[in-house]
Length: 460
Image (cartoon, rainbow, N blue to C red):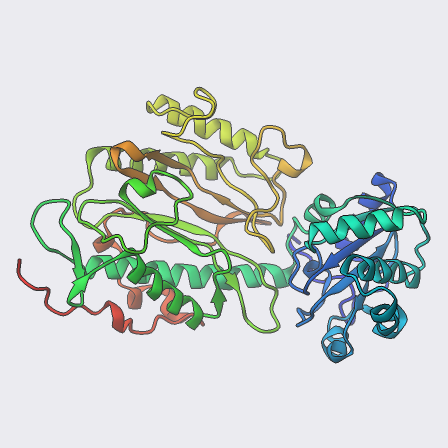
């Protein structure tokens, strides 16, 4: 099987360690660590969430995973006991952590953290020694707490990368959540294309403002509609989105200026990366990009778009288990170099042409394993169960354009599956209307988009 049906501590899971716990134990042994300690500010921490059988609404919490043993969850507030119990993990209660006593004897945040860290480890049978530390808690407090405990025999090593390795292969529940976020992403991208297709250029020539529903179509107006549609489909946008037109699209991570009016013949990079936000489902990301152009694109834009279509097809053909992400990156670089574009291989540090890596893993964080960097070791090897993006792009801000195409991919038992099968056409008028797509038959049904229904634009 490509995915893992059980998560650590899942009710009804067999006594034998599940694959994720077994991988964690092997990693801890290799690092010479007695345990993994995750210090989290909430249950959505990407280093904690993969170990929960059911997502939970928790504040500050810790996870202790003794090497070879089952993970345990320490929660700090009695009012969260029902949420903690629903995770399926063995619990360490506030009473065992002596949280009330800590409030009087160790009120300062770092001292309080050191107090609960030491007691959570002790309650799990872990004695002072070498421990892998992970989680996204405040760095200053972690440093101070770790330093205080070092004087009592504790040695800390970074454990974040180990957790990333452990969660690289997605479980069934995680893959389901990614699929749902991807379906919502596709639905909204179709709506954006429909919006642009319905917009009216205010003059025949390229460069004319696009109007919709009696007013200019701005990036901010489009972004507000995207936010509403995402929320309606059960996803959230904690990292925002990219709606970057023209020269702004020429800088890959430019989000786009809300006050900017979209124009005919100008490419618009639409990069959406929402996270599943449905109660009871893991909070995992999806990621997909298309470039759209209402009106005839410049020759340079059309040429770049064609080069990227070929590069994306080549990358997909190479994405097989055992391939290295860097090998795919090199292949795409060579192909784009032959087309006449600078790349990181022949022009290191270039800010025009192809300027970034080919893709990234995706999951509880937007950028996860596998990676596509040259220096990568095992974390850069594609394997069955991985979910990652392939996203070649070409950029020239001085020439007023950027073009990027990004697919979200799952490497399953039958090979590579594209989770975001959308059109690649630059012209949004060539995209099927939302109601005509397969998305209309899913749980993410396309509702009529009233804000995209144009009235007659004023005559210039």
